Length: 86
Image (cartoon, rainbow, N blue to C red; front, side, top):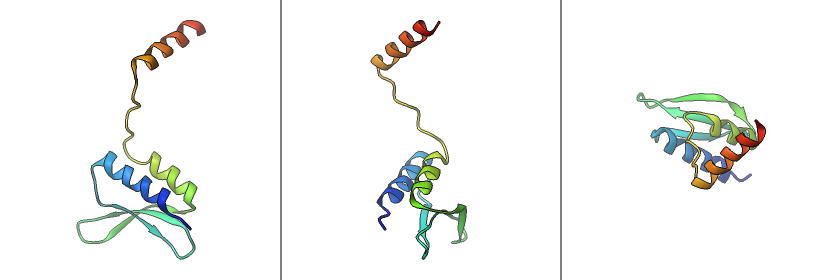
């Protein structure tokens, strides 16, 4: 089983939170779980062990979210959508 997507999701979480202590654990049953290293050298389990797709969705929704980047074209398009719906 490939865990590249899971690893990439955890790396994005590390960047969003500015905390390099997040990691993932892959169980013998193929389930993924997010863990956070504590100061005492232990790991705090976050969430339950889940399959790959559920894990990626969980990690992407966990912690602070990055604001969506808006270009001038995006802003103009959204203004047009508001005008047409009113």
